[in-house]
Amino acid sequence: MGEPGQPHSAWIRSALDQHEAPLVRYAARLLRGDVDRARDVVQDTFLRLCQADRSKVEGHLEAWLFTVCRNRAIDIARKEGRMGALSPAESQTLDSGQDSPSELAARRLAHQRVLQLLEGLPPDQQRAFRLKFREHKSYREISAEMGTSLGRVSKLITTAMTTLRAQMAAPTVQAQEVRS
Image (cartoon, rainbow, N blue to C red; front, side, top):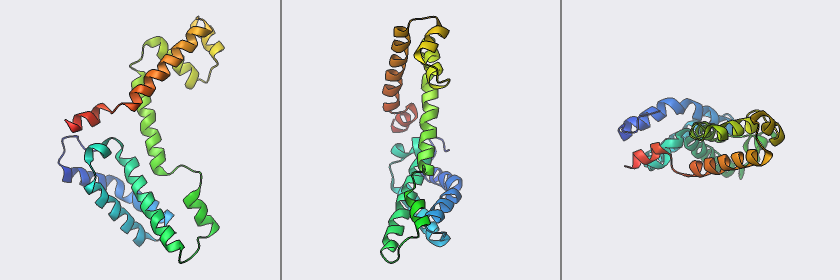
């Protein structure tokens, strides 16, 4: 997406160019195929982006946009729902257990960040973590493959998880640079 030092208007334009069409399609699905109302929702979404604190949005822009868009579309659907009931299929679309695009985008960003942070762990923690979570091996299998005790495998994975959780909870370097 945009460069951290990019002027605000250029950043907004870049976000609009990249995300407007997918947001309109998404909002139209939520609004029973009404493209005009979907465009209004997307316009409102970008107005909110213009008013948002860039440093709080920039690291997860796509997820933020889809969340705002979804919430606005659901507000409109609910408001109009008082005038007419949704069909069962429409209700399922709004309330399905399926992940929204914003949730998928947020999960993808978190996954990328975990992989990036994993590279900073000591090699034995990386290996144990990957064997457990990528290859779905048991502690006993990891112990045999790494030639170490079950207790050590447990310690390696627990330490890796604790470190990754702490690093995931910390602000990203990019967000810190934007605030500077």
